[in-house]
Amino acid sequence: DGPLSAVMRKALERVCSTLLEKQEELNALDRAAGDGDCGNTHAQAAKAIQEWLQDHVVPGCPGQLLSVLAGLVQEKMGGSSGALYSLFLTAAAGHVTEGQSNAAAWATAMHAGTQAMRRYGGADPGDRTMLDALCPAVDELMKLTAAPPGGQMAVLRTAVQKAASGAESTRDLTARAGRASYIAAERVTLPDPGAVAVAAILRAVLEALEG
Ligand code: ADP
Ligand code: MG
Ligand code: MG
Image (cartoon, rainbow, N blue to C red):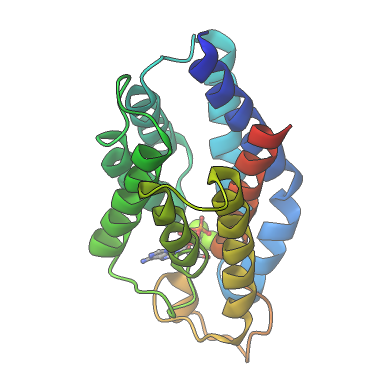
């Protein structure tokens, strides 16, 4: 692996181990308002990615890696999350290439992925979905497209905090998309599992980049 490949491998390994640690917590959150499998879908994705990492060299082109991940989650993750992450990753893939993989390109890729998820998934922020964590984080990340005064890592740290508070904010939201919108739930006071997962994924990436 080249230097960028090594960083991407490390970030993915951290994301996968985090998701496996959170499997039961995410299932419990999904049981409160959905069908109880959100930890399982994320764990299936994590295991598929871990297996792939064992057998493959991580490509130096990030877009190529994101396309591989899109295929893996489409095939192995299942659930709404699998389809939505696949859309996200496919749209993001076109924005980070071997020659263009600076922080600004990654931010643009995350933004494109989020827009694709919104367009095809039909949900908006405020609907109690993973978008409630993703959108505030990506808005922050877009500061990377101009030289941010406090530096790039500061932007990433703030984006992770915004994802976490966005996930927390879903406690008070009524589901208007996904399974949770048609499963009759007593007033749910737990956060949306997909949003909690997004916040955990972004934190894992930050930890990998810092560590
Ligand atoms: P399923 O609902 O099919 O069982 P998961 O349990 O894996 O799938 O994922 C559920 C999560 O998917 C929800 O917690 C929510 O965050 C997210 N989600 C569902 N529908 C949408 C949508 N239209 N847009 C964005 N996120 C969504
Ligand atoms: Mg579910
Ligand atoms: Mg399900």
